Length: 201
Length: 201
DNA sequence: ACCTGAACACCGTTCAAGT
DNA sequence: ACCTGAACACCGTTCAAGT
Image 1 (cartoon, rainbow over the protein chains, first blue to last red):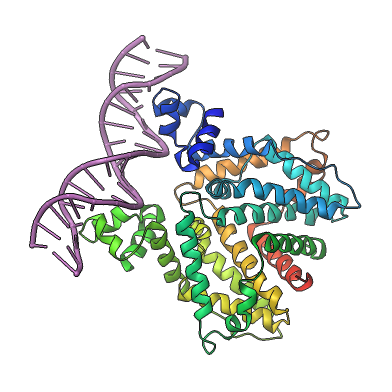
Image 2 (cartoon, each protein chain N blue to C red):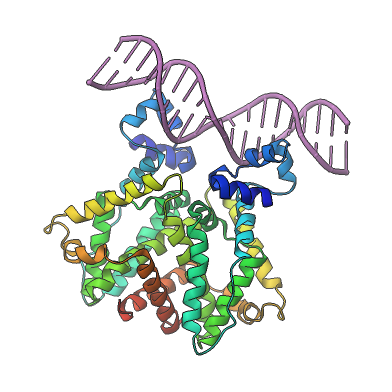
């Protein structure tokens, strides 16, 4: 496990492959299938290892919202450092003890905020999905230039769109690209929290 | 392009590779790099092709919310049929004419609902991200069994968690697993729409 | 009983060399 | 000038055969 984390830190998740890990451990790739069912499970184990470093707050009814925003920001920051791990995680529906701990903490904060338990239970999924997806959208270390190129492509396309054909894009042009990633993410969290509080099941 | 779609429909996105596509076109893989910069761009082109089939509503101020929910459900349904395409798309920040058309339609509906343009502009990203991420979380055709296995793992873990260690999970146990995917997704859309309306930037 | 070498069936991308 | 065969550098997973 420690070896897998080292490879990820040094060369990126892309290099944390069964073959590469096996080579690092001086054995054949077949040997790893004794400990792990497939590559997805290997990546899941890496996530849980990373989540061990996440500090969970002791819920305080007076500032539960800020605590929740900070906790989600922390989770997301952690994954933004490894976008392709975020991509794996999204397909994975992670399990693992530290992930469970995180779910409990988010539920605890929503409880402290007086959010009805049914809404909180469905809301946790949305909050974690927002964080994971936001990280997954970031370009990978390796692909950074490409992903940016792709994004620039959309930006350019939206800027050049004709007012006749797409009036609403034209009318929102400035707002579409405004704000930093951080500002947008914080707003998104507030949107989610407000909605989770307000909308009954 | 038509060939790529056929391969996807017959064998899944996993088989829409540069080499496979080249073989299907009776040439070497190098030839494709004349038309497309890399595999990600190929997948992006496939998405835009699929989006051509999405019906966009003419906004009606009386039922904009239901129209928006139906539009987002349509987008998501389309991607749920190809979860690994959704995964590619999340990393891609898609461009392409049909994607632009979709953005304009969502903005139009939010406008019809009287949502301030700044909130609408940032909100579109959240709505599309919700759809894409929800589809990406679905198991792939090929991985279906595995992904389900993973998910069952978390479900089991959450069910068996001790009341002392994780009181909030224990207290929300029934709600955590309640509802169909459809019900949860519709609720999530309403949460997002309510939040986008309510939270100023 | 446990482990793994070697094989099967693939990948993306580049570039020198051909037409 | 344009196209592409062949090569480089990898993959995940399985299973027969060894210890």
